[in-house]
Amino acid sequence: MNDSDLAAHLAQTAGRILLEVRDSAMFDGKALGKAGDQTANEFLVHALRHQRPDDGLLSEESKDTEDRLAKSRVWIVDPVDGTREYGEARADWAVHVALAVDGVASIGAVALPGLDGNIVLRSDEIDAHPTHDGPPRLVVSRTRPAAEAVSVAKKLEGELLPMGSAGAKAMAIVRGEAEIYLHSGGQFEWDSCAPVAVASAYGLHCSRIDGSPLIYNQRDTYMPDLLICRKEWTDRVFDALNT
Image (cartoon, rainbow, N blue to C red; front, top):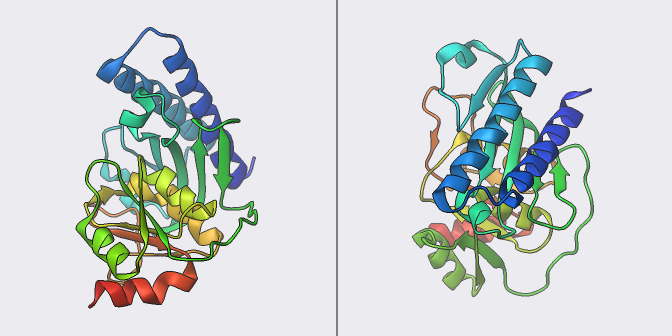
């Protein structure tokens, strides 16, 4: 199984596991989120260590070590991106499985188990999605939309679309449901690596909000900000950020 097939298979299987955990009715509230995180993480970590024993591994739900820093190839996973949305049985949560090569988000799969069919978007399978005529749609946090995103939306006369997980927001751009995802509230590498790998493969602009590249497998996994957008909006977003 090649790296792309492995990433997609693991993301989709973890999604099925998470749905089964939630449907078991044995957990609710925070306990459900914890059970889902732990169960999906155990599957992903064991599978990757078995299938790719020589690669590095970084997961939100596992203790980080410095071993990965000496590796060229590092798998970066988020077993449940959007734990709150998962617990609320919403559709806007995701499973992220990515491979960073020399710091670049190179291969990725993002599963959206809350949608019909537990769909997976992959960095090696590109589907055409409709373009949008009119003012841009910007996906933002349901609870704390970034001030920069609100400002850009106002300057571009755009529409704000509140949404859950980072993966769901990024895939909304990939799927043609929105044009701009601008986040400045801080994330970690596992929040964006798989979405960036997929979005980049689809030809979207992906960078920090100052235009600098997104670099993965760093000692400090914190990533302050992120911009994913359709390329026809890139210059206008940066102009709006700088005026």
